[in-house]
Image (tube, rainbow, N blue to C red; front, side, top):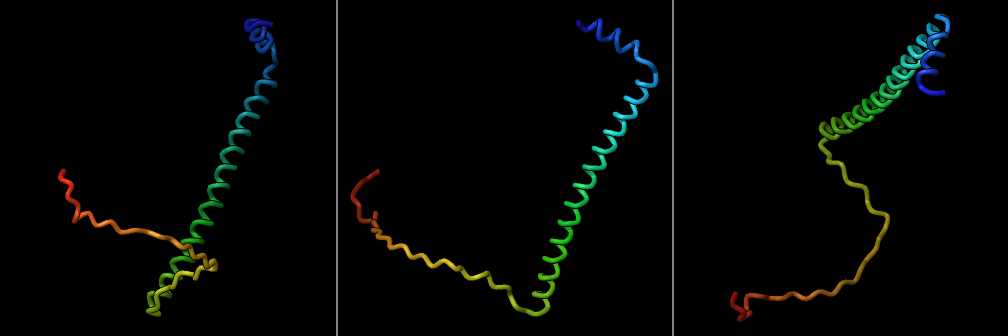
Length: 95
């Protein structure tokens, strides 16, 4: 079946089939848009909730006068390092 035969076959379809295909396509587009809107709405609600929580903490810290302390590290890892300080002011090398 080549392209011309396929188009002729589509042209023979009754109008009811065409209407159903168009309505199905419109329904698919509407569902896709609504799905995107739901995802964007949930993301916006989560973002607003986080911002409200952070603003409440900031205002509470502002009125109590205490600065929030960063959380203490649980991991105590000490690394022994040796280094040497090189004083280049005493070099006789001219550049």
